[in-house]
Image (cartoon, rainbow, N blue to C red; front, side, top):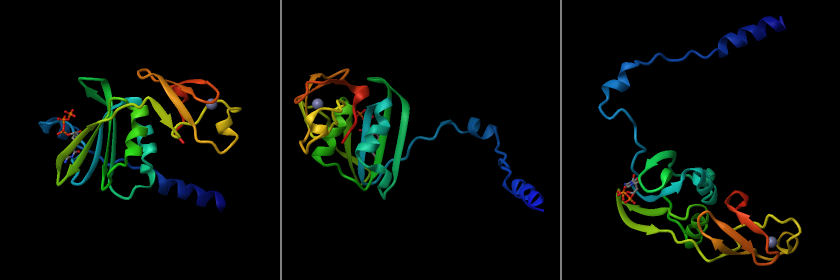
Length: 178
Ligand code: CTP
Ligand code: ZN
């Protein structure tokens, strides 16, 4: 009895793909769908493609209420492959822009008002990173006492930073944002 029931359940859950017209895309002259423009908010452009989700994490977009669009591996003339993050209904704080600059040193932050780009900010990577990155050294004082972290930027691209307290060097792959 139980087996029959399970069998019926499986049948119900079988996925039936909807047939689509394979010629439909070919008939569309643009052949692609671009991420739609936003009315009010922020577009972070020219993100190195592998840092795109890091940017989303820095901005806490998982819990953002407005529309969020994230695209990776887009073609860019200046940086090869790039990512874009579009966030409707959000403006960034200076602190958020500073954090973004650590993982995306060439990013552009576009402020959108009434569907137009009102301001275009080129992020600047800081010389000193205060209380943004966690030190990867478990015995570092910042991991054991309530002391804000502090790193000096040794090299900007590819990023290399050095902890002010324990002198641990870290590359972009070691970076964990606080
Ligand atoms: N954008 C958007 N919604 C709008 C206006 C712009 O999502 N209402 C996006 C565009 O898709 C683009 C970015 O914001 O990714 C910047 O727009 P714009 O300055 O018009 O594009 P570009 O000239 O390509 O920017 P850049 O010179 O910085 O490469
Ligand atoms: Zn340290």
